[in-house]
Length: 329
Ligand SMILES: [Cu+2]
Image (cartoon, rainbow, N blue to C red; front, top):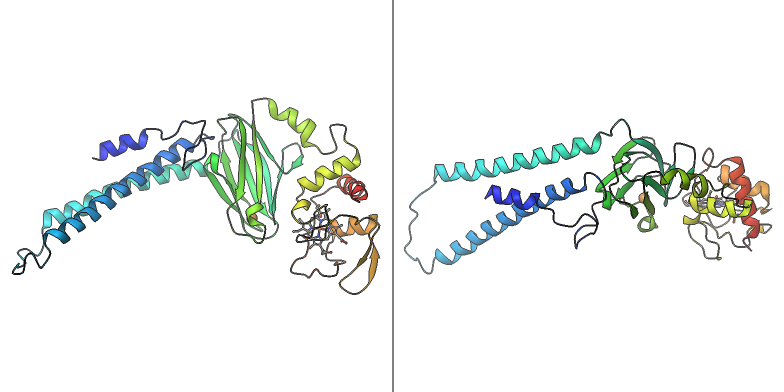
């Protein structure tokens, strides 16, 4: 029985390039092992559910008291039977532990040639910092190149999960956590936050793009750098607005999210929480980004305040953001 279950578990459930009803494609080096471990446990559980529930129903019918009104108990226990149903499942459980432990040590041990990308979680966006300093809202990697992600959070607990890679790790404020994987397939996948972190939690996703070997450097030079690729400051600012996650709280069309809309912000008279009025000029915008607590817009409290971007956006990024905001009429 164990052998046929093992054979079932080893046999790949899904073609590696496409998902099935349960799972997305197997796009990383450990996806197939995780899936086969999963199916091993799944089939063992299904088998025992059927056996136990089956015997239960069978005995209920067969030994019903109406059919056997005078039945007497003939045995109290059966030592060999009890030993067998304790030890055999015990061995199967131990085997599951070994599978899980192997998988766990694998997932927790990045190879020494892994390329590190820093991941910052914030309500409600992910930002990725590449070894050459490029900051972006998409994770770009290369096929067959091991990647190590160093995760941190600037506000609350988040969790980084790429289902196609079968890997997941919490992003914890004030602590660094790590996760690694080797993509085995080119294409586009999604990372999703899997730790409930507030209103927009379900929209907290990031695109993960796996390039052919050699494709990443080109992307980093042209697309990755918002100021590169011949962009004007306003165009660079629009990219930074998306990359830095401003878009998660500020719209461009006048509708209100966690923060006020950017529509028509530049040059407008703004009412502050303390009753004063300011003009939204360059200095105010710069201060709003670096020290958002200094002046709080009327209608927004300390609870729905903006996180500081001090140390996360550079001077030329702020200049580009201002150039962009001038164009959002
Ligand atoms: Cu989150």
